[in-house]
Structure formats: C-alpha cells, structure tokens
Image 1 (cartoon, rainbow, N blue to C red):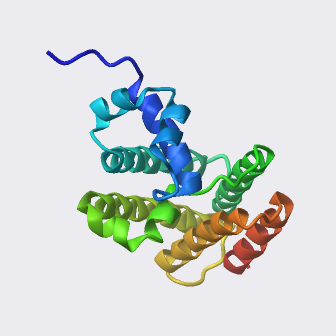
Image 2 (image 1 turned 45 degrees about the vertical axis):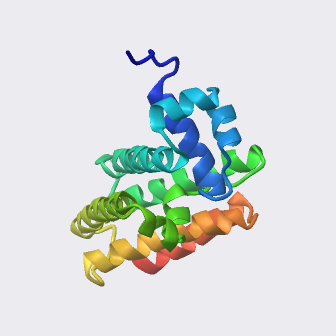
Image 3 (image 1 turned 90 degrees about the vertical axis):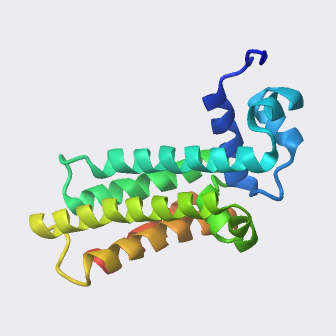
Length: 200
C-alpha cells in the first residue's frame, strides 16, 4: 500500500518552478529543489520519480499559472486595450523589481526551456506545453489588440497576430534583460518604448 504523501503537491510544483525559472534545468540541483519545497529527497522522488518528471510537471504548472495571471490583467475591461497592455508590462516589471530586492532576476521557465532545444527534444510533453502556452498567450494578446483598435487606443497597423508576437517578444526580452542586471526603472522605460512602437 502506498504511503500517504506528507506534502502539498501543488506547493512543491510552485517551489520547483520558482527554482527552475531562475536557474534553468541544468543549474537547478535536487538539493535546491528539496530545500525550496521543504521535502526530503525520498518524498520528492516517491511523488515525481525523477527530476525530469518534476520539471515537466512544474513547467505545466508554471505555464498555466503565469497565463492565468496574464489573462486576469488582459480581461480588465475597465481599461482600454492599450491600458491593459501597459498594465501587463507594469506587472512584469514590478515582478522583476521584487525579485531584484531578493538578489536575483525573476527569470522565466518558458524562456529558459525554449533556449534549450536538447531539453525540449528529450520529452515531447515539454514541446506540447510550450506550444500550447504560446498559442493561448498570443490569443489573449490578439484579443486585446483588436479591442484596442476598436476603442481607438491602439491605431490600426500590422496584423493583430504580428502585433501580439511583438508584445510577446518584448516581454521575453524584458525577462532576459533583467537577468543581465538591468535596473527595474530602465526595464520600465524599455517596456514603454517597445509598446510605443505598437501604439504609435
């Protein structure tokens, strides 16, 4: 009979994702994961069997959680379409500000994983998670860009899909730039300048 788990699986996934998003897969040790999740190695492997399995589950949890946070901002119809995009970028910069106060950049598990083709090739579930996440996040951005064009806050311009890719690229770039040590106030100016190319 299986022994009862002595930890909250969702909390372990959250803690693991927090490590992977900052350090990436290769530079996150099992010891770091156990310490962050406050569980014994045996408990971790009883639940997830391997670091690889934990990574896949944590990536899925991370992608879903981050996408839901983005969706909640972009669904705020009290703001114009442009206002929702600004609010999203402000939230990202604020997250980087908090992380910097803790001595590191916030990181991004998705960006780390995309930059590691060997990791994606090792488990087809990773590619599927990333593809779904990108598709759904771009869909959210496209909807807001169309709403902004309807309410007049975003001028007519390129295809909404291309504009969504521009915003997504800006977000990924902010994450990477933050890891080089750039200050949050500079990130904020970069975000506004990047958005200006879309908003005119």
